[in-house]
Length: 142
View 1 (tube, rainbow, N blue to C red):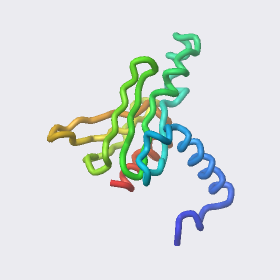
View 2 (cartoon, one colour; view 1 turned 120 degrees about the vertical axis):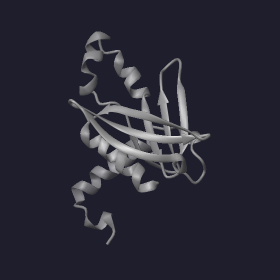
View 3 (cartoon, rainbow, N blue to C red; view 1 turned 60 degrees about the vertical axis):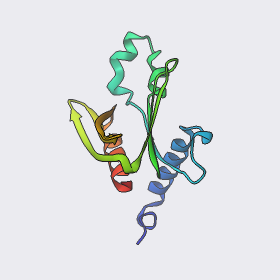
View 4 (cartoon, helix red, strand yellow; view 1 turned 135 degrees about the vertical axis):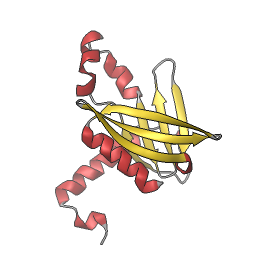
């Protein structure tokens, strides 16, 4: 039985809204022709509360530009506003994904092999459900 058939109408509407929001988080010209956005993640607002207070709310601009986007073919990491760094990692290069909780904050750790070298990228801080969802979506596709 398909997962969408077992969902309640409310859960299905919520999933549709999430997919629509996630697909807007990446420019269409940065995707390959047969590529679809599965989910997008940004740092949680509550986890970054001290940064909001310190910057008088301007941190929101940076938080929205700190993204991790999972597609059906790769993971896209982006950070920064003026000095922007973007990284594209094919899903075949993902070696491991882990959920990590530190205090009230949650992170997704993505272990990647690139040109024979391994590195770990931490995505977060996020809510616990957001980090678990990111980890499960990456695991489902690797």
